[in-house]
Amino acid sequence: MTKNKLKEFFDKKVDQYDQPSFINDDPVCIPHMFRKKQDIEIAGFFAAIFAWGNRTIIINKSKELMKLMDNAPYQFVKNHDSNDLKRLLGFKHRTFNDTDLLYFIEFFKHHYSTYNSLEDAFTMHGDTVEEMLTGFHHYFFSLEDHPIRTKKHIASPEKNSTCKRLNMFLRWMVRQNSKVDFGIWKNIQPSQLICPIDLHVARVAKRFNLLHRKQIDWNAALELTEYLRNLNPDDPVKYDFALFGLGVVEKYI
Image 1 (tube, rainbow, N blue to C red):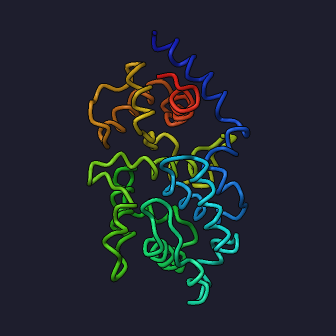
Image 2 (cartoon, rainbow, N blue to C red):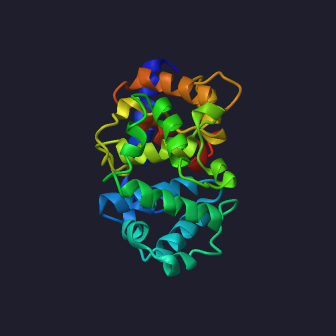
């Protein structure tokens, strides 16, 4: 398939999946429960971090957590007391447990005591998404006595991780003119984003010769994104909708 034909095909798939109908069955439905910027950020962050495995379970566990936080996550992280935190004990999603959750809450309280947006937690560390994700990991675990076990839940390019869930979260926050993504962060441009990649996306990408690297790691995410920038330099990660739709929904591979 020629580059022009591929772009035409992928653009049609983006138009097909970047629709309001996509939201309800995807973890992005969790931040869509809210209107306040900080609620969207916190709800979106938890939904993205929980996003591995069955999508229905991810959504249900995210909704369970939002309910425990009175469906007001920003107010909860800012104003909770010890009795509020007791409600969170026993929460679990796969390998994420209440130890991890309590530290996440502590980090959010720390961050929002100084900054108005979670965007600052990324942009303070550099100009590229790689620098932002690396710096975010160090910043996230900069609080005293952070649990070592919790580190596995926040990926970093330093560890050569794909950072799939964090890249998906950034897509939600940054991409504009979308019916699914929010576009509420203005200091990171859509052109800077890195495409979320997992086995499903990688299989589709390899089927269309967009990706040649065997290992599915940070460098694979960079390679795939570089190709997508050839199709649309201003918004390469919009093609995540096409790759995801073909791989997960249509079982193209």
